[in-house]
Image 1 (tube, rainbow, N blue to C red):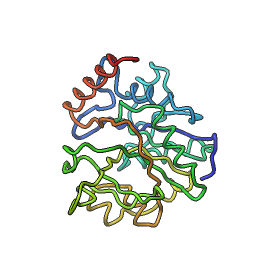
Image 2: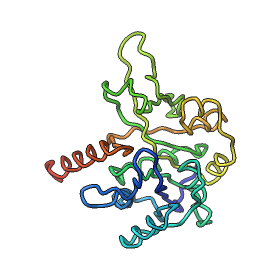
Image 3: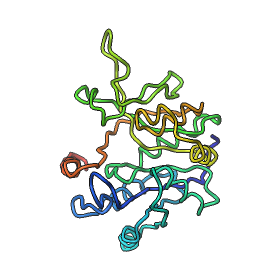
Image 4: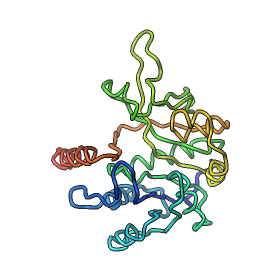
Length: 250
């Protein structure tokens, strides 16, 4: 899409997580996760406004104490994307919307800048996402989503399986990072499309876009992140943050 300064960043944060209850409020090195996500994403230079979209007054109160803008959304949403879509309605000026996952406390502003760069690099492009080089130990882990892209940067497919299949040689695998930038029209269209067959099979909602002929631009970044779904993930994030804080130049 055409570059614009009217970019809204939305962090969906649901209180009733099944695998890790009250996940957005879980403390990571003394700070609630939702606060850490906001602080990381806020470093992006391209966002006109950044808000948390939540279904819980408790999360909104925590955000208010930290000076973070938040909007209440329905508790009936099936996905974070639906929550982002509802939050978008309160910002009629928003021409582009960035979905910044609320369980990604290692997000960096440079990642969101790269994501917007991918969205704005082609006026015909309506959706963009991120990837990063994948360690060989994670190739066959179904919780790690893989992506393959064309030379043009458009996604060919996303899968929990190891793609491409290494019949010969050693492919370079890319891990999908679940950040998305949409034009307003693309997010509206996604919201009104029914779930697709491949989406249901893989449990990956981005496949709904591909099945309906909506391309997704993919840009690779040199940053990996740890999505938090379990208490073990929290420990991994804390260890990674400690390592970052003691690295030279940090």
